[in-house]
Image (cartoon, rainbow, N blue to C red):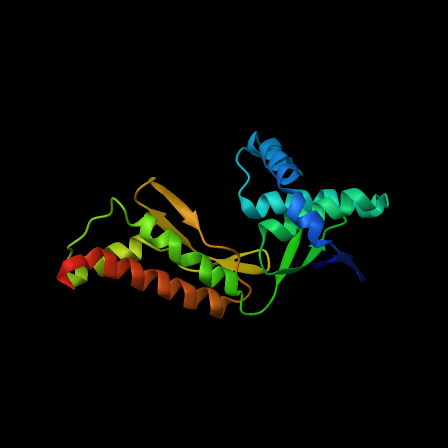
Length: 199
């Protein structure tokens, strides 16, 4: 699988073998375990890096690997990004050392983001109020599903998980229009779950 790495006006195509992608789960989990303890992202300490921040941290390691021509490390970093960000096409690397400025480009359509929404929704409504009136459900769904917001060069929204009492972020989505479409689907699904038998 190919990940493009863009450094200023240079573009590198990193061809990550399928065998490496299939066999690097333990390494990726170790990276995640290291980041679970928090990470210094340039001037800011991030206690609990989210998925995008983790990929920005790894992208910074990828830049170092490219600069040092460490091919093996570069492939491992690229594999992490490919595994954690489905539909990623390219990573734009910030050479000033500001890892929060590392950005990601996604293939148009982002089908995995669409598919990924469905299973989470059923679990996320466990513990939510049901049997609400249409107006109550509309208001509650509005509270449970955020508006679309920009993350780097991609978009996402969040859905409140009543079962865990936490917000679940959608996958990164390539375009605002696609993110809005997926958000509407999540909103409609939450609305219908809240109405329950009253629908």
